[in-house]
Image (cartoon, rainbow, N blue to C red):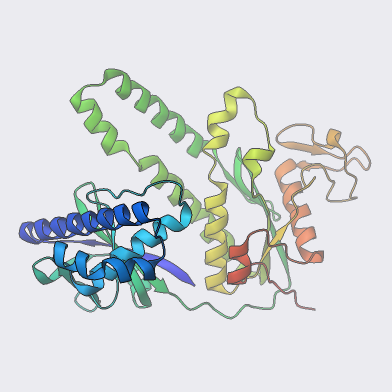
Length: 372
């Protein structure tokens, strides 16, 4: 499985200046390549390389492999859209490969190509990303963010063999309760919602003030809410995958692709709905499950919240409120999210895994098997 390890470079002031100059020169080269590509309507990497390689190498004094990476960056940008001229930020990220970057994981140091030659630069990395670096393969992106340099390294991490399982753990994703499983465990969204409101109010106040110090504070706050949400999603996904592995069960999730377009909410709840990070949580659950050898099954979400998990009766009136489910046929009552999770688990046990996106097909997600 392809995962990304993030490390923070710790260059000296002189090395930092050289890294910035390298990034600025490489992005200037990308803009020059883009000018030619746009003017001549030439967007394929091979054609651009044939036309520009020697000129770009001579004009910008870049190494051969850096020029190749710049040509590839421009060609990749035009793959997305050939109707808009591509421009590159002065200090935008640049791509390195094994010919111009080497990791020395034992002493936590990299050897990286710069405009003045190779530089040996120490780095800082967390334990999780340090483990990923043992499987580093392919490209790494050098980025500059808020005065610091980072390398985002592609790592090809081996997956455990998919286990034969004895059942299915259904997981219902929501807003009031971020996740609820078919065992009845749930993870409240109140802490996330209170944080969202606090950050929204704080941003509004600082934007209204508009002073230099207020703008500086806004920059400091930037990304904190996103990182908080990601941390919560990591904790939830780790708990669910650990439970599934310990109990030898697959994990069944609703296929919620395009849910924001398919659902409507009250005006007062729009901000909360659109900041809902269920897709990120699903991604975290999926990749952690694959690493642990736990099958993931995607099921049709239709009517899981209206169907009785005891008798199968489906009716809108069954859902009495956000939190309460009461079957109009058999009288069964329970928490509405737990009821939905049980329905998801039942569908996962009897339906073929549903894969709604091509990336799941390519990675094998959803090809779970139940033990007889």
